Length: 286
Image (cartoon, rainbow, N blue to C red):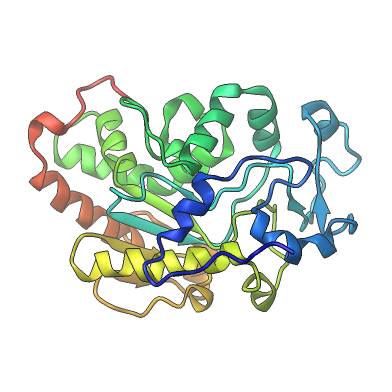
């Protein structure tokens, strides 16, 4: 039996646990989650693992519709972005999955390294803290998803401030963070709320939001868009918190005109007005 991590009131245990995590095939999961997940490992309808890219694309179910399995040979994604410095937090359910995930992790060392550095919250000078707004990974579906959600916000910010799109994108990438309720990949979600709340990794994510993020919101240092599973995140409605429900949560729009998109754009406008010009990246930089 693995000891369940102590969930302290501050919520900081989330970062400490993931910073020390190392991939251990075949199931790339948090050690503390093993006792809950182990019962699924022999169920081919619930869990899938692959040893490499060739095994992945040669699988009989590769690309099949209706895949609800947890893909546990992919690096977990509990969060993205520089959480200590982010001022815009988007709360989601769990990372999706596509061929780009397997190809990227098995065949593109720089991408895999970026995912692991994100878990350790290590961002070398010049790197893009939010990996899925980093143009060098624009071939990945994660970039396509996030860019699709935020391109209009970025374009509006660039237009209003007469700055290159790339500079506006970088400005957003340095302030945006995403926290996933469940860190494990699936193409569609088929796990009940009660079941996922048994996972220590889920409790750690919720504790971090309540213990770290919400106090920052109350101090006016950040905003939160609860885009998916607001009932499980259980974040109280306070100024600076936007809850999505029903059709809003299914679409998770972050474009101008949506409640979340407008909140993000207004926060970026305020921060851009406050930022020294020297801190903005010149044209041509990622």
